[in-house]
Length: 115
Length: 109
Image 1 (cartoon, rainbow over the protein chains, first blue to last red):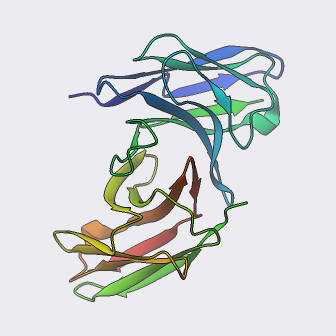
Image 2: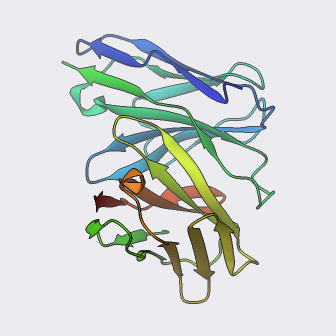
């Protein structure tokens, strides 16, 4: 019972490099989310996908792109990494937003450092 | 814009004490409120979810209340244990989720 799986767990990049963070869930959830967590700023929503085939910007989308590959997978791409993107990235999933009794489930995070 | 505040930012108590963590939010138009636990270097574990129509939820030694009209939620932990040491976050869900910065709890043996 894996839940939400994120890869990689750790990554160090140089400024200007690109990379894709992967996320997969096995709970048949419709909605998936990408957050970043920074000290003193809490978790902030980067992008979300309410259902397969749709994606929307969150609070801090600049510098990121996402792909909802299928119902299970939601990837986050940094095209040209910047030091300001050093953070811990969390993927989460839930049932459709309209179902108010469904909690979000989180992965263990990807710790990303941009030098 | 929804704002979520958690007070206190840090709390240290001796083992066995009952304690209350606070969460306040500015916009009462929410679907639900969720309390999470986060251990150092780990992801978030869901503890309790209260729907907007509910007043409280209980799970073991944890009890969460919601007063939507005043924009407040509390997480009550009974008979605290060292294993309860972690950061506790609340999230308000209204289409998009807004998180507080968390309360870091230390329970001393």
